[in-house]
Amino acid sequence: MLIAIEEQAVLDRIQTWLKTTIVPQANSLDADPYALATAMAGLAQLGVFGLRVPAQWDGLAVSNTAFSLVQEQITRHSGALAFLQVQAQSAIAMLLKSKNAALQKTYLPRLSQGEVFWGVGFSHLRRPGSPLLQALPVKDGYELTGQIPWLTGAGCFEAAIAAAVLPEGQAVFGRIPLANAQQAAGGTIRISPPFRLATMTSTQTVRAQLEGWLVADPDLVDLQPAGWIDHNDRQNVLKSTWLTLGCAGASLDAIAHYLQQKPLDFIAEALSKLSQEVEDCRQQIWRSQQQTVSDPDLFKQQLQLRAWSIDLAVRSAHAAVTIVGGAANDLNHPAQRIYREALMFTVSGETPKIMSAILKRLTSRILI
Ligand SMILES: Cc1cc2nc3c(=O)[nH]c(=O)nc-3n(C[C@H](O)[C@H](O)[C@H](O)COP(=O)(O)OP(=O)(O)OC[C@H]3O[C@@H](n4cnc5c(N)ncnc54)[C@H](O)[C@@H]3O)c2cc1C
Image (cartoon, rainbow, N blue to C red; front, side, top):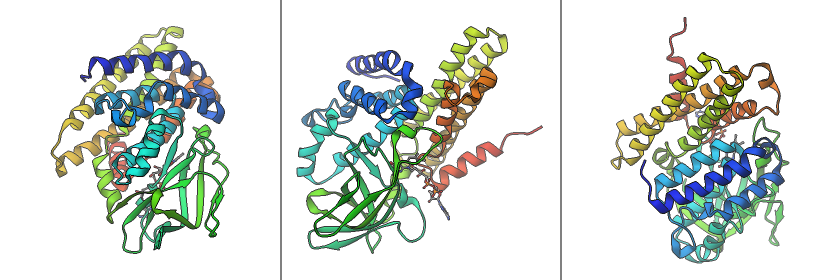
């Protein structure tokens, strides 16, 4: 996986910071929102939020490969930090594609420097049936009413890009505050208390209820045709595999550490086999990502690669737990945390096609 010398220097700097600053506190970052916010500020100082942003908006504009390797490395050291920053990266990517030049001019330099963070709330577009969040065109913009079931980053993110569905099926994307709020004209946003999750509680995921919330034209980020989410999911099947590979890598690091305490041949053998499989998987993902022609066979192959990376992350985490033994049941044990992170990365961004690919892989093993 080739990256430019300057990109390698950025990656090295980030890796050094992850090893020295993040590794010692990885478990508390999973639970403590304040520690996680401080870590986000650390990533901002390293330029991580400007990685994909062009220089005109104060970004570094690194290649897709370099960006993927950074995502992998962050996840390898803290799943919670990786998950929270990836929401902020999604918001930046959406604003970069926006036609709202004024909003870009005001916010892209600030977002790219990590002065402020935005999250995203669009996964509900995947739910079948009546839209959970509806948009009504009004004189000055769109009025949003309904629910955003998943919104990560409360307390850390100032705003979020919310997606709502118009009566004709198009999706409207607008900036909303990620907090309780009331507009003079009566629009309201009410957010739930942070969910009590099995992992990454520090990322403060909430549910938001909107009633007639006006997204005025200056806050409009995008407008997409009906079916946008399916197209977007199809284009991005492999995007999150770098986080899943990072999660598998976290288990490999843990196993290597426990091997020093328990120098047993079969642990060394398991580490060697899993390391080889992770490397094979990432090489295949990288090669597949380089393909430019989009055809049904490529999509099928990418679904299988996504399922493989998830299976690998869960198996590697299971192997780490197996090696640690009873102590891995302690909620604060690193192997326990990584195991829970692997479950989180299993469902993140899940679609019926991804679900099907994972289940096929899980049920195709020969059971004796
Ligand atoms: C901790 C956490 C934080 C998250 N934070 C965010 C966030 O900040 N922003 C964000 O946008 N998303 C967020 N998500 C959402 C995440 O990406 C979703 O988990 C993922 O999209 C799967 O959707 P779901 O959990 O809503 O599950 P489901 O509703 O079960 O959907 C899973 C898939 O099954 C399909 N499906 C559901 N019901 C049916 C049915 N009856 N018939 C056929 N198909 C069906 C859906 O179309 C969907 O593709 C978060 C999730 C978690 C767990």
